[in-house]
Length: 309
Figure 1 (tube, rainbow, N blue to C red):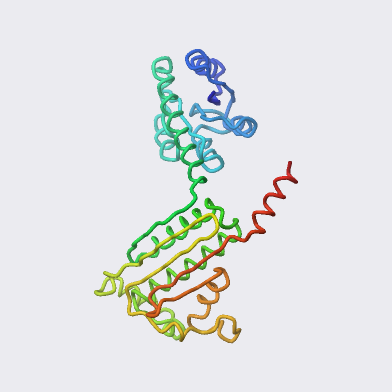
Figure 2: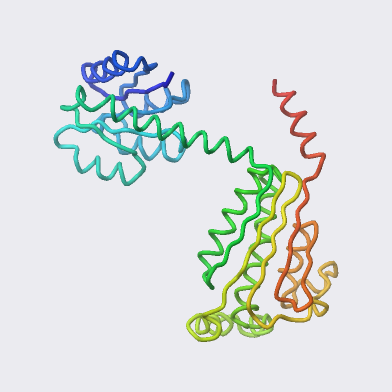
């Protein structure tokens, strides 16, 4: 049975919408008088769908949509629109509402719209459950020299390692930093061939040269290749650029404190600190970061789950 929260400051309209849903689909209906009340009801009942009026005191429908989107992103919101609330409705749809029904057409359209939203929402929830059932992933990306893409990819990979259970939230951030360092190195030092020494001498010139080369051949035509292989016990990230490479043996020793301030020392230190293994190919244009799941993590989680009960 689907739980639906009906939000409206008008008791007549609230009961009209709720009555239609109970009569035609047998749903479990909850009620709220405005946005503030709605957030309290959501906390109590966690409905599957929220059906809300737009113009209400204390907290209107637009603000409610924003709050639900931020706090309960999996709960879809359907708007009930009346004459004069059209602009609010358009803005609410842009902010995350999934559909709307004019109040004057509740009897004709409400059941069908709720059915469509419910079906789509259940599919989303099933997909989310399935993602946590994946036992192995093998994915490849090829991206342009674009820092925004690098940032987006790091975020996606962090989500993947959480879903696969390789590490927890705090380790996710550390692994993400290690991956980002490898990708940024592939971007600046690999494909664009801008040296770390230049950044040490004149960081403004370093970034100016990098920006210029993003529009020049052969640099602008190069790509970064990423292969991701994950199981429930290990995450492996291989990052390759199309630059000339370097001699990996020339890298500073990240365990020597004297190298922390040297060009390239910080990135290497972070990768070595946050990944369990860091391996370069012979030509230096490919690095593989490996993170193993620590057995004690799963034991601690299991104990924590028992203690919470």
